[in-house]
Image (cartoon, rainbow, N blue to C red; front, side, top):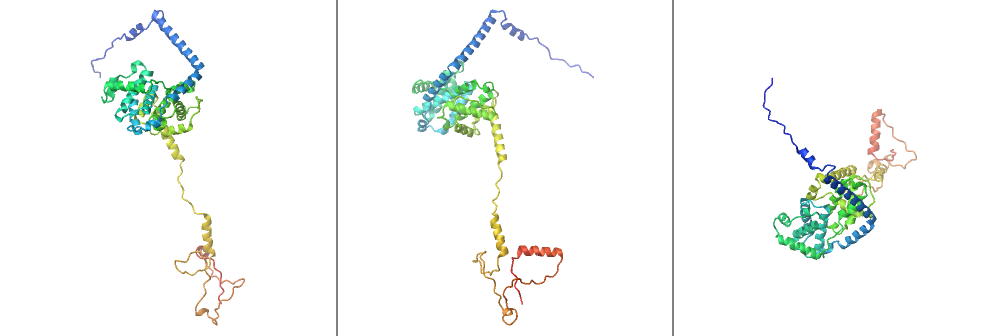
Length: 405
C-alpha cells in the first residue's frame, strides 16, 4: 500500500563552480603568464638561497654561535631578585604560551620572547606586579622582530588578556624600557633556528612529527630553572635526539655532540608537563605529540614493572643448620642447671646415684669394653620397626651403651 506524501525537496542549479572556473586565469591570458612567471621566480630564488646557504653554512653557524654567547641570560642575577621568585615562572610561561597560540605566532617568537624576558630580569629589578607586563612587552617585541605584520598583537588585545590590569601607556613604556635596557640587541639564535639547521638535510625533513616533538620538549624546558642557562644549540641537539628515541627514528649526525646529561635532565621532566602546554600540543596540526609522549611513558612504565622481581626472604646459612643437627645428634647427656646454662656447652656424663648402684649389689658400673653386647630386641612388625627407627633417629641423640650387670 502506497501513500502519497508531498515532496518538499527540490534541486537548485548552482553556478559557483562555473564562476570559480571563470575567475581563474586562462592559459593564454596575461594574468596566467604573470602567475607562472612569479612561480618560476620563487623556485629560482629558493634554489639560489639553498646554494648560498650551503656555501656560507660554516660562516652562518659561527655567527649564530657568537650571537648565542652574547645574548644569554644570567641565572645568578635573576636569583637576587627581591620579589620575583622561581615558582612564579610557570604561571607566566603558561600565559605567554596561551597568548602565543591565540595570536598564531611563529615558534621562534615564543623562545625569543622568553629570552628577552630573562635578559631583562638579569639587568633590572622587576616588581611582582610588573612581571606579567614585562612578559607582554617581550612578546610584543619578539612578534615585531620576527613575525608577520598582520599577526603582531595589538596593545588593546594584550590589555584585555591581562584583564585590564595595565593601561595601554604602560605597555608602550615597558616596551621602550626593555629595548633601552638590552641596548636594542634583540637578535638571538633561538632553539627553533638550530632545529631548522639540523632538520634541513636529515630524513626528518619530511616527517613533521619529529619536529613537533622537539618543539614540545623545548617548550617544556622553558618552565624550569635548570634549563635557563643552557645554550639553544645544545638544547636543540638534545631535544632532537630525545625525540628520535621516543619516536623510534634512526640517529643522525648533528652540528656538535649531544650532551648526555642534558638529555637525562630533559627526560626527567617529560612525565610532568604543564596542562596548558599538553593541551596545545594535543592539536591535530601539531601531530598530537603530547598524546604520543603520554602513551610512550605509559608503555615504558609498564615494561619497567614487568622486569621488577619481588624480593625473596633471606635464607639461613646451611652450615649453621648442619652444625646444630650435629650438636643434637652427637652431644652427651647434660644436666639442666637452669636458664643461665648456655645450650651447646657439653657437661660430664651423669653419675648414677642410689642404693641400687652401691657396692656389693652386683650393679656396679664397669669399664667400657671394646665391643659392648647389646640387649636383645623384641621382634616387631616391619612397618612399626621402620617408624620406631625413624623416630629414634630424629628425636633421641646417639648414646653409648652401658653394660648393666
